[in-house]
Length: 279
Ligand SMILES: Nc1nc2c(ncn2[C@@H]2O[C@H](COP(=O)(O)OP(=O)(O)O)[C@@H](O)[C@H]2O)c(=O)[nH]1
Ligand SMILES: [Mg+2]
Image 1: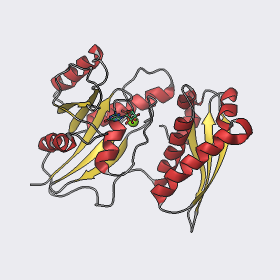
Image 2: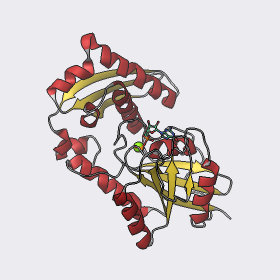
Image 3: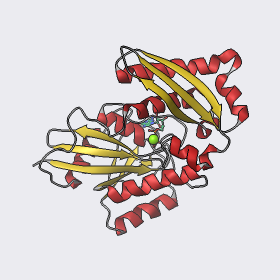
Image 4: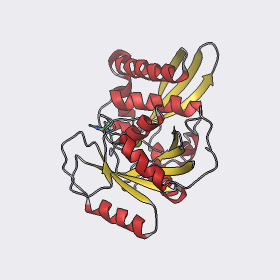
């Protein structure tokens, strides 16, 4: 019997959602960083097994909203929830349980949603006394097989997989190029600034090598200098890191030209959000 379904992965920012999905999909579909709210929109990552196909929906972490960008992120969370066959809710084992989270899990269950609660990061010291369905680690791989088993049991029956075997996501190449550059920026820069940046691909010319021009958009003039760094050192570091991920992903050489632009308060500018694909 074959099974197929959509599984929305929910949880607080930093719970380990993107890391788990990348691990199960076997491709890097979602960027990961130690900074909360790295994921901004839903990304489908497809995992295949002998008798199943799971389309995971990576979601931005559940958080309080203030800007239009925050609202966009939470709209993504809601739509993932309503379209999913199963909700996989991650609770970080290394953090204490949060009452509001427990309430929202109970609410989803009483709304009749098919919820699996899993504790992530079980390789770390357990500070979470919630009785979850399973605990696992994406780092060590512990219990990943069991987690998949639990999910597959809850999936609906299907005649065949929906996605072709080599189709592991629903996003276009350009999306990943932008995300890898955003990831490199998040990794190289510390605190605060990351939430204020976005990446816009200005041109993407595929050939023997790929020629890419991209803007790193930041919200304050003072951030521009920090992103560029003394003598351009920081931007160079960002570019080198991003190019490596992009080349691994595309499987060919690339030229990456990066510009840093200041767009004050772009997170609340509907036109800019549309241009960046956040709508
Ligand atoms: N020790 C440990 N760290 C993890 C594990 N899974 C994720 N992380 C780390 O937790 C941080 C947040 O992960 P991420 O997948 O971006 O979380 P998301 O915001 O829920 O998507 C990153 O620094 C990851 O490397 C795990 O199983 N064990
Ligand atoms: Mg994420």
